[in-house]
Length: 524
Image 1 (tube, one colour):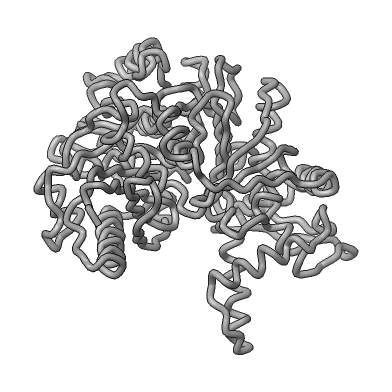
Image 2: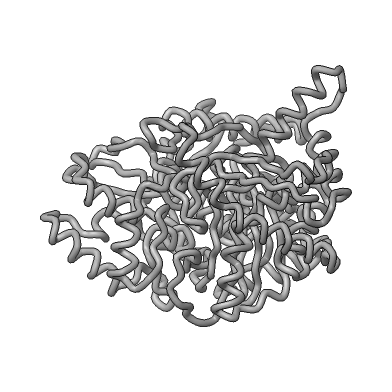
């Protein structure tokens, strides 16, 4: 394989770091991964810096081993590299590059006062997980590290900085840090001035642009892999320096790229540990706490419904059922167990037979919960079968997303003609598609590369950085050169599925008080 005719995408997701190497035809050629989990330390959802470093190096080593096994050669170079990560969060550093606090991830719901104050001051929805909300909450809390703050970035921005020395992020990633002006492809100037005024009121001499990363749209130069960066990623010393990098992006932007959903009026749903729906819009929307306004990797405005919780509870139950299978001597691997249980859900009643599940491992902004407790409940007369049990968990994973989408389609009159799904929720063919189609009452398509998800999308953005024609727009590049011959499977849920999801959601809304009570009464 000519390694110079490849592009590498690496994404640091919530439960797995994954690398995907694509060839000149934009098809996956090799992959690697590393499993990890966030932890709750002193009330903060975080990953340690040591685990971040160990994880990305182990993921790259796994990719290099796959290349060696498949092609009989060492992974010494690629045409381009792109790094993605979980959007939002708080990673502050001093001038010596030392982390000033633990990494505060998107999962934290500890910035309520700051998010509310900024939303009112800006006239623009600032969710709790956004970097500026974390920063302003630190200001409100009077945290001692702030006078030493020199740089604030995201997980993707941090890794990109380590690889290239550049303090920059892609515009889509930046749009989850601070509001973006899509016309200028930069932070919104009026809101920057308003935030600087707030900082001045608190006595700080540094300003927002002093500490935030530069903003770069897809395709722009974003540095090259330095010698130090190459050793950081590949401690064996085989990876060569000098490889160009694309602007680092968040998992929302890579999801849009992976599903060819960067053109106006296209949309996608990414469903993994968290889930979010992205619809590219052509006009400003009103201010809704449940809807984020972010951008595509090229800077076009996007309405985003983001939910903190999706598949974690499903994973926990599959783990329990797998433990039972092992105890009775059943020989089934984890992937096979997922397929079996997901397909079983198709046999369940459309409304799950009266079963209910709340998949809240953490707080959820859409339903106004600052913490979460997974809850499964049923009435004595409910049809308690394995099929209904699994279906309840699959519908629960989409319920909060549906609540947010109802605002987008109802109050804002945004039409959803179809959606493209990607991520682990859609890996078993036809199952996740059918559940999502029932939720949105619209066709849902899944591409052959759906299981690759964000890292594949990041590899495509890296490819766009080096292989796009001069002046070629991202949406045209993806449509003409990547997805023109893509294998796409479409599915539309039948009316009974749609009615069943509506019935499930009605019960779900009515019983939310149970989840609230669990949060109040069950200790972490």
